[in-house]
Length: 234
Image 1 (tube, one colour):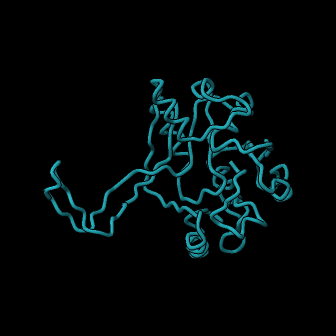
Image 2: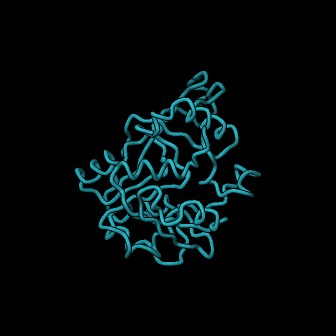
């Protein structure tokens, strides 16, 4: 998925699509992702594009430079993080990856696919364990507003989506329609609500959300100093 406008990273993304934002020595975040997928055995990629799509086409071309076959699906209007699947579903394999185009992680994609296949599920969500800290004293009360507990600055563990999925084509088909807007959380909820099985795959890995300038600066520094962690072998 490479069609978003990346508004939180403005004004950078007024000139560059977010997936082309460079890391460390200048490698775009989407190139890193594509190289990681190739190492995992992926050979064909469809980029769903919209915002500044001509720059993505000019940079990646047909994918030969990366050892991939890349084609493009142009969204005339934004279709969300799952909607573009509807237009290309018949071009996809029995199961396939869907990822955000700005995904920065050390996730082992091949291991995720093996976990999906071993579980025999309809969808798998790459998940990251994150602590959410409340910077205040948390008060607990009863129905009469009498205090029953007081916890100072508690932290709560949560699983969050990393923006990477393995989907089974026939399981997704009833939920997507070409040209219809659909976000991935809505697709996952619809699948679970329909009795389909969705696995949350939570390996030990690194994952960064690069949506804000401070996060992007951290990502650049981390990639520059730990390139081999993200892309073993260069």
